[in-house]
Length: 554
Image (cartoon, rainbow, N blue to C red):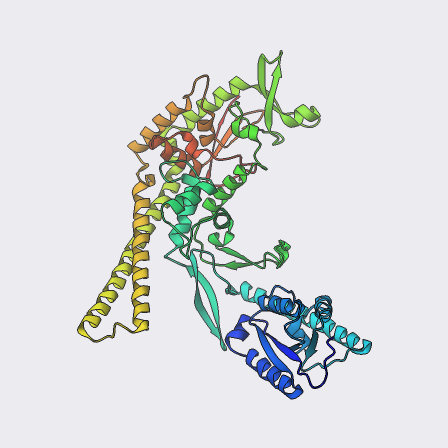
């Protein structure tokens, strides 16, 4: 420590800290710490040279800007002060190891840490007492954190929002008064909800001029069309990926999913908070399947770009293993054979092998004759088209609401301008400028959202897929199945069939209604059927009403 004579005033720095932003906002502790610290310095004749204030920062780590600035000033040569004054050692640190580390770091430069309420000497006994108090502070901090987390989890179980910025497409609203506290919940934000719905639509269907988009393509589309984030910023890949994978949008917000270090917690510790869904589960699951399929760690490149028609979607009906290519007579004969049987023999699986050309023809012929029959298409898609029509009606209603909101904001602006012209309002008032800016932003945002949704509806052809239109689509789809020199267009086949199961008694061709509808829409638009091609889907949802199945005898 500095060896100062009694006649020389020691230079002191105050370090003031509260744990939460709420305490800082309500001036609970900082002013009191400051008052006591200044009085302490005055009583002992210390010269107060600087005050470091840390509002709303935890003392369990050193990630505190003012703390780091203080340490830098105290360890510089020469030091900016001789003493750091804190209300208690817990204001400085609540980790006994880190406390001792920084105490010794300051001491090496001749700077001493003193507490107003816990005065200690420099002898070994007092050092040990300080360390023991630091251990108790650390224990208390961890206990407090445990109790706070328990309260937050219970709040989440009751369906309330625990704070933080909500996901885009939602906003926080008052829900229930309990004592002095107002409980909050999430509700759908009409200004940004359609942006989220558009992102999911682009991922599954594209923009009407292309097929389903990947994350990077969606980012470029949004930024290129001036559809920005909630704060007016540009979209990024990571941000968009979180939107496409967040279960909040299907009404299941997950609280306490990760630790402060970003590690995923056990499922039993995660609390699911029910919120109004923005995206239906079927759409969400389809997007997750596409994201997984597009992941190069999941989908083998040979499945994506290989020459064989059914590689990656053909499975053994007995064991569920993949049917892979096998050859005979030096490659003259090519078969789809059960990979489990090929590796383990008949004891592993009794699945069959079938000539490649034979299976390819059977699959394409049955897609043409059974699936792409207009009556069957109308039957398979009837309920789906009804739901899509409901979505169109809902969007039309939302457009009307947005236009009404824009008209109301415009009317309020007109009344303000009329009041200014008549002299009833002073145009120099700052509050008036804020009101005008707020109303203008509300009006412009509502108009922009209404225009965007109208464009989405104008590009949509889902509601016209009935009657003659369906027949035209099926004829065109059949023609496209046989495009391409030397065989069928594998992309077209995969657009209609996502799983082929080869059993002893029959061959089952399975697909998804949504994928079928997207493929037909792409066909109508003159695009390649690969606009409807899904990625590799390793887990099929059996007995799901959104699936379709046809079978044929081998």
